[in-house]
Length: 61
Image (cartoon, rainbow, N blue to C red; front, top):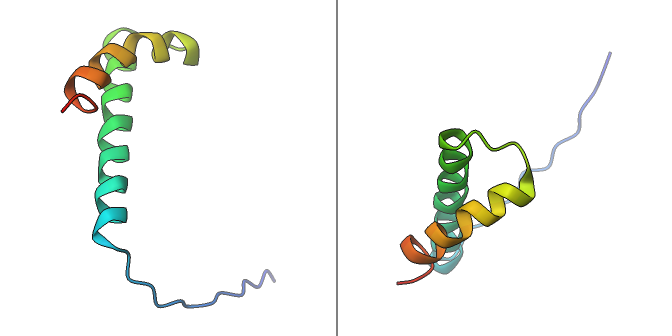
């Protein structure tokens, strides 16, 4: 039998943290979309291909 111990923690994330996590999620989704569209399997190639779009669309505002 496998037993797992868990601890409940009450934590309310700040609005700034929630905003940051949402931005990160959007950036990851953009990178995934670029990887699928361009059939990229290398992290270095994905980084090069996605940098311009990320800096223009998400980071550049």
